[in-house]
Image (cartoon, rainbow, N blue to C red; front, top):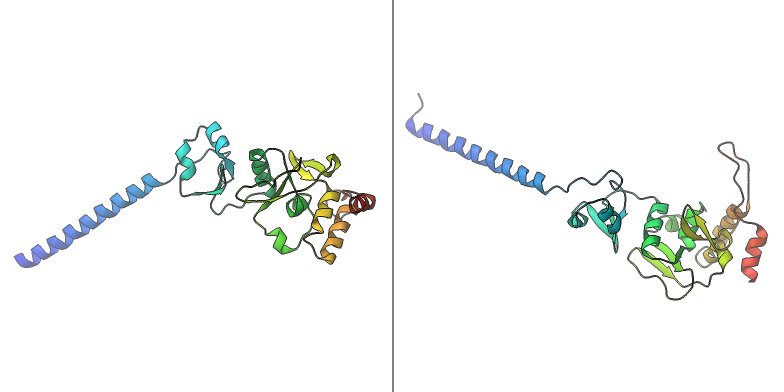
Length: 213
């Protein structure tokens, strides 16, 4: 037989357990309520501009939730989600009119092999097509370049320095061996055991013209 004292003790333990459980349930409910609302499928898992967010009908405050980081002014990126280089360049170029991707960024867009330090660089290299001041923006490394019309090309809607001009600009950041490898990549076409034949992106004469101009 359980004494009244023991009964009171068990009742206290039971009440404490119930109170704790209610408290935990309430805490979980609060946490669920604080979870960011899902993004539309075309924005989920990828970087986007605040303009794209508004166009998708997503409330402005959603841009400041904890699952997103500010990659640059007006750009949000999901934490832990790797972004394709071309997509990032397209966003930044749209927010910075009149710019062209250059140097290591242009080389990577063209598929040129680069040292790991440049492959892993987080900043996007941009320059004004018309010259003038360097582009200034978080996530961007701006450059002042003097470009001719033939120095600027396009890859899937993104302005990028031509292969020959990209190679010329790489001379400022590459060791000789890496610069030679880049030249080989740009001017050599070859058959491959997989996929279509690799076409030369420019000629040796194009590289010579860049050096001599």
